Length: 96
Length: 248
Image (cartoon, rainbow over all chains, first blue to last red; front, side, top):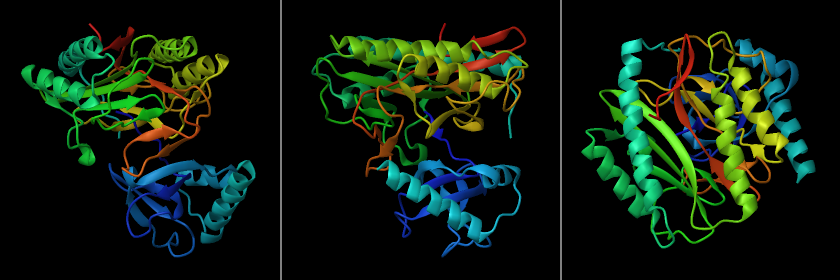
């Protein structure tokens, strides 16, 4: 059985929980099952939400410098996370 | 953390893999128009338990069955149920067993009766893509070589590889590090070493690579409703190259 291809920098949507439907960026792995996600708003990078991988749908991946820094485990800001989500959303709308 | 397996552990994993292979042979014979996916699941579970093994998927993060049975546009994680197979369908069957504490994991997509030639081509390309990925499993090669081999073969035939789900390390747990994507660039990523055991599993869509998850939170379907195929083997990397554990 395959597993969700979720890594730091993956853009996801919550499928379950009170935050269902919320878009996030994956910051890092928490444990076998969970990853830490943030959206820079209600979920800032200083207080990310642990989510079960299975309760997340993969939508895409952040690009450029942010992707590299998330991969390396560097600090990122709320603004960068918000911008990445906005960029992804406007791209997705264009593609329909 | 990547857990390397000793030759002795790999021998046990071969036994687990052999059980998976045997169950797949029986299910392949049982696939026919009119058969329900829950009948296939019941057959699989009884064969797995008769072999002294445990169906790994059952109860895994709440998955309700022993096999994943994904029909037509269902990519993976189809939940067995009352759906009857029909002539012209395809069904992807994914099986995992735990035997003597180790997991074997493998998947095949079968045609149900006669299928459209284009659908047959989808199955052939996916099966060959898995072989292309396995051919890269030599010490010193990289994860990106596996992904690239799969992706380039699939895309050269006009199909697409699913990005959202990936293969994985296998051992005492079904999902170990590393993730094994079916896409990538050659010469990038983790260097392969003897003792690594990987589940390589291309999921190939006839149309777009994009997928979505149904409200049951398990079943993944293609975004465009076109068919999808899935082949998988558990493969050990040895000094001499790949050894497929889920095949005799």
